[in-house]
Image 1 (cartoon, rainbow, N blue to C red):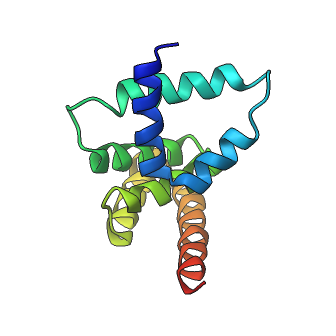
Image 2 (cartoon, rainbow, N blue to C red):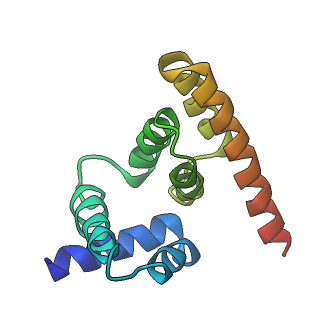
Image 3 (tube, helix red, strand yellow):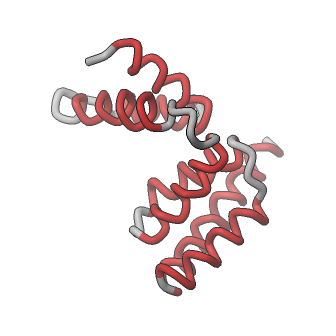
Length: 129
């Protein structure tokens, strides 16, 4: 493992997804899934998200679309929060999900809008506290 890339990845991962989300993921880490957590942190977050070619905001927009089309609901929920942390508005998220409907299928978009609505409601409740 490249410690420098891992540390860079952890910083970006926490800034995007939030400490609570990352801590939950790391809290479920065991001998079996530890290599996956390390791989995701080092290569996904450190190597790819750490590149200069796209902003984190743009990467979040792309991720929302791809994850929605892949019907990965748990990942979508986390990346919706991350997209807001990276500067997208809820209105922009809706526009991305409309694109998903046209190019990836209406069922994927409908599910994704439902997940986004639930996620935004949770965020609103957390803010009210």
